[in-house]
Each structure stands twice: as C-alpha cells, then as structure tokens.
Image (cartoon, rainbow, N blue to C red; front, side, top):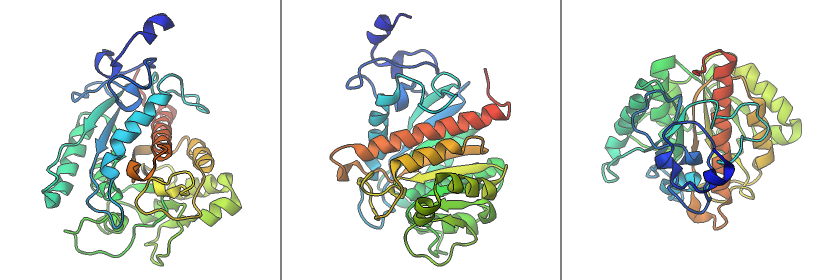
Length: 326
C-alpha cells in the first residue's frame, strides 16, 4: 500500500483486518487502541495481548489511575508509525499483537475484583497469548502474578518502583497497592531469590529476600552495572516485569499517586530496559499512571514508552529462544 493511501486510513484499530503493521492515521483522530493495534476478544493467532485494568481502589494517596489505560493508549499513537528506536525487533510487524480492551468489573463490588482480574488474565493466557497489562494501581499485579505463576511456576520479578510493596499484610482479604509483593511472595507466586527491585527510595527494612538496586545505586553505579546486577539475579528462568511509573522522578512523571523525589530519569529507564534484552520475560505491566495530576501528558507518554519497551523485551526474548510464530 502506498504511503499516501495509508495516510487516508482511519480507525485502523477496527479496520486493519490483521495483527501486524504500522499505522499512519492522524495521531489526533480515530479509534484509539494501544499502538493502533486491532481490537480483538478472540485472540486466536495472537502472540501478545494488551489489556487495560482501570482499577484504582487500592491506593494509599491520590486516586485516578483508573484513567491510566486510556491515557497510555492515547499517548501510544505517537509511536505507531515507526519501529521502536534502539531495537532490532519491531512488535508491530514481527509479532501478532492485539489490544484486548479493558477488563470489565463492577466498581462497587471491590471484594470481588481480585477473582475477576484473575479470571480475566486466565482467559487471555488460556488462548495462548502473552499479556501486557496497562494499569490501574499496583495492586493489580498480585492477581496477574498468580495467573502467570499457574502457567510458569514461581516467577522471578523485575520491579521498577519507588516503593518495595513488601509491607507486612497477612490479611488476604485486604486490597492494597503497597502490600502486593509481600503477598505474592508469601503465597508462593514469586521467588524472591530471583527478584530485584530497581529505583527504590522509601524505607522498608524487610526486603523479604528481594535484591534492591535503589535509586542511588542506579545514579552512582550507572545503568550498565544495574543491568548486570539484574541479569545476575534473575538468571534464565521465567520473569515478570512490573513497572510502577513512580520509579521515575516526579520531574519526568508527575502524574502518579505517590510521587517521591530522587528517582530515575526517563533516559536511565530506557537504557536499562533496552539492555535487558534476552531476559526470559513471560509477562509484564505498567501501573500507577495518573493523568489527572499531569496537565502536560508527560507521564502517559512515559508509560506508553515503557509499555512499548516491554513489548520489545517480550518479543526479543521469544525470538532468542526460537519461540516466535511466523
């Protein structure tokens, strides 16, 4: 198709007729999906499914991340034209990637949410697609880890975050974005010996055996040393990567519920993510994007870039292991 013809297209999220290819429609119009991927509920033949979980009822401070998936999708339209910079793989053309839409749930039945999200994730994974999830607050990672651990066994986790989320909480009925890693480890979904947290800069003495590369480590030791430490910890086993946008300094991502100064720059995050190519990533998420607290949209832009990097990481790892479908 000639480029001029392609530029006359609109709503390719609905009309593409497949799961591969770049999109050239106006960024400011048309049906908005992640990277203008085709919307699909039937994931037959899909390698990677992007889904939104607009849940923010587990936050300790500012709500609003329910609008995160929508904002990330809109910001991602800026990247739908070209292959991602710095990669030798393009998830828009080299894999079949679909936008599976948002998870439905009853906002007034909060206690029913964990089981609903678990069922949603299980339904996607049962169709043979991997998951890239757009949040939502960080609690959503707990049911997502449960679903992935049921398929892959106990997971190593790479967690970018200002907070460890390992505060003690043995009441399994509580839904709290600050205790999800504590519960994931206690429930056996996560192997702490193969897990590492990057960008931490809040006090919590109990790491539960998880390796910490705090923000000072990244700033002083550099990205290469951080990547080497992550690789040393996670090894070759299955890894889930969760990126809380507050891992970034508020100068780069002010739109989040619990901002903490001294965080990573967007450049540091980009370098680290790209240099992790080859880890055995089986799923991932981007959480805590809160567009209400960022009039510029910069936080959503950062979230969209992180999500694209995660798609590249997943695809690169699958290709390296000879597991990509043609």
